[in-house]
Structures are given as C-alpha cells and as structure tokens.
Image (cartoon, rainbow, N blue to C red):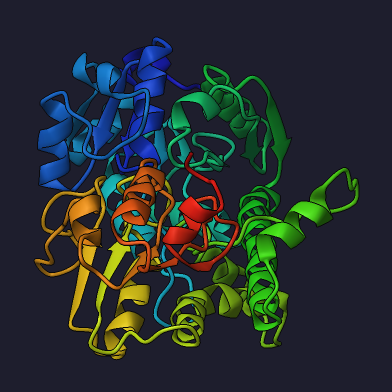
Length: 427
C-alpha cells in the first residue's frame, strides 16, 4: 500500500481534545511526535492554545505550557495529518441505547479530508460493533478501502482519570483491527508510549474496554450492597470488610462509596442494549444508583433532616478531580432537598464558584460549609476532608456525619463528629 507519508505535515490529529484526547496528544508531543488537535469547543481551544490545561490532570500543566500542541476548529488539518485519533464522547440516550451522534458528526466532518495513507483510530469507549459501523461508513462515503488505501483500528484508552500521565506509559495498548496493515500501523503509533501492544479484532477490543469498566462497576456494587446490609443489621461494614479481607486469598471486598462517573455508569448500557433480559449488570446499576437514597434514609433513622442545616462535601464523581460528569453528588443533594432542610451548603475545592452544574449554587469552603450545620454528608473523598471533620469534631461534636468513604477514620458510615475525638482518631 502506498501511504505517501512524506506529504503529511503532522504525525497525529486528535479529534476531541477533552479528558481522553488532550492527555494523549500532549504525551505524544513529549514523545517527539508532531500533533494537532481538532475540537469544536472555543473555550477549550483558547485555554489550551494559551498554554493552560482546561481541566485538572496531574503531570500536564508544564507540558501544555510549552505550547507544542495547538487546537483548531479547522477540519482541513485532517488532510495534513498521517494518523487521526477520534476521542469524542459516546454517551447513552435516555433509554438504554448507544448514542452515535458525536461519532457521526466527526465522520461527516473528517470524511471529505480523508485520503490515501491515513490511519484512523477510534479511542473512546464504544458499543460492540461501532468500529465496524465506521468501516461501513467509510466504505459508503469515501473512495478509500480499509486495509488497502486506508487503515482503521480501535485502540481503547483504559487510563484512570488523574493517572493519565503515568498509565499512558505503563498500561499495555490493545489494538483491534481486521487486517494486518491497520494493526501494524496502529501498533507503531501507540508504541511511542505503551510498553506493550496486544492485537485482536474490532469487537474483542471494544469488549475489553467495556468489560474492564463493567467489572469495576459490579465490584463496587457488591461493596455498596454489603454496606447497606451491614447497616440494616446495625453492623460495621468497615470492620467486616477488614476481617473478611485480612490474609484471605480468594476474594477482596472493595470500599463502599458513591460509584458513578462517565467511565463506569454508562458502559453497562452498551452491553444491555443487545439483551432484553434482566441480569447482574442492571442489578449493579440499580444498587449503585440507590446509594444516595440509602444514605439519606438511613440517616433519618438516627436524626431528622427536616428544618435542619446540611453541608455536602464534594461534588465531583471522583477523588481530587474537577470532573462532575455523571457524579452522584447532585442526586444526593436532590434527595436531601426532598426532606426540606432549611439550608444545603455545597463545598468542593476542586471546582470554581459557583458550582458549575448547580445553576449558580454557591461553592463554600469546607470549614465554612460545616460551620453551624446539623449534618455533614461526605459525597466525595477529596484530600483535606479528614482535617475538616477533625475541626468539626472539636467545634461541634454533636453534628451528624454521613461518611461512606470513611474519610474521618471512624470506621462507621453514620456517626456524630465527636466520635472521632472519643475514639482517639485525632490525638
């Protein structure tokens, strides 16, 4: 196959420079490749082009400041890029149905600029069959032939948010292709970062990504159900977990918590779309989604929320990030609000003021949010909340705390703040 690679200005074009695409593009720049970004978001483009990260991701602030990567909205850069890596979102519709709109829009935008010698890689989480859909789209809308004049592969990202810089260089890279040339070209691209490349076909690579995420989601759902069962029997989930895991080789019970996030919460739907039957994946979704209800209802067994002041610590879906996508914290706040408290104060030091998804809701400092309230919910286990709870224990020991993440170290989900002092947690 003649590739004509000498005529390409850029090694790679990243289509969609968000939380998946931007770290990849910057890492490829650091590895010595020439990279251009393509994105429709003008605020994101201005931020990156001025040398700043548009979101928190450790390890990239200094790298983006070098301005090695420019992000544009001009899709003609596709023609001058040897490899095109697509990292746009792949959400679900309201019903259990994969939403291909963003993929279609990308294909419509890049299709006229594709030419002989291009390598196209899908990287976002996709439903089974999506890469083959792209192959058929290319066959219909271009004169190019996958495996001959064009290469196509699915190369899933499997990084954890907050660990992209490390994991892009340490995790094996799966490459799904249906022909040897596409597989080899995709492997060559990602070998600039990954220590190992593993080859398979389209659908197997798609399922690897989905299975990785769904397995974690189900694992956390079991932990959350154990927490609910333990509290129903007035037992301590943290003590049970510690005893069950200690020197036991055949299972590991995870910590309970608010389990959500765009990488976990939707992926079960990409499998269940193809099955009409109830299964453990749907049950895991129901269990994880129930946790905000559990926290509110089981606190009400101990104290009331009506006409009380409540603080919620954390609003993002994950520890020490600024990502609110699919966070369960807003759902928790809505359930608290149903109890008609006199006030709900929200604090998340990783977010700007006001809370961005809260329609102008004030973002309190953690200590101010807890000052004079009757109850504190720890919705996210951000660094520093242990000190906040220690201060609360000293100032207002009777304040109820709902701490499913065990941030305070009380080894209880529901307790009054003074328990931290009484049990010598903070001596």
